[in-house]
Length: 155
Image 1: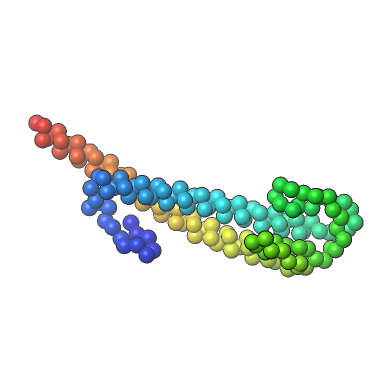
Image 2 (image 1 turned 120 degrees about the vertical axis):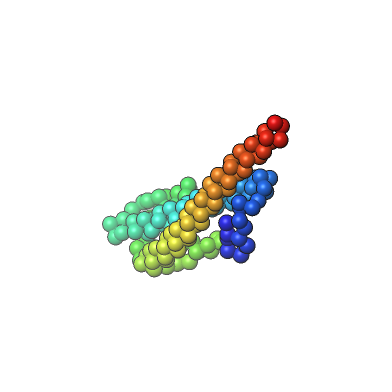
């Protein structure tokens, strides 16, 4: 088992208690990574929704009353007055005016960035799951060996 920045350990040399501790650590790491994966998926979906919102700014909608998203769950009625520019959230509560073309480009870049991170994170999750499965198998074998040794000692 190895991680970047951590030394490699031959888990077959660990005793059962050490294996249980390694298993616990791997389970915690997997839980954290899985949670992060879900959060990134949510961010990806948000950016894709932003692209759709900006793409919905069309000449046929000029002057019509529409629902304008302030958050993912809060919309207010408004009218499209400027079809060439939109106000976009650039993070940490800051908003800037961008052309619809630039806004779509920005959100597509964000989707691409998050997608790459999701791919990397998925690879890490798969490696951790493989490591956990290996530790579980070795733990099972060592537990059987301990029971057999205990039975031989009783005999």
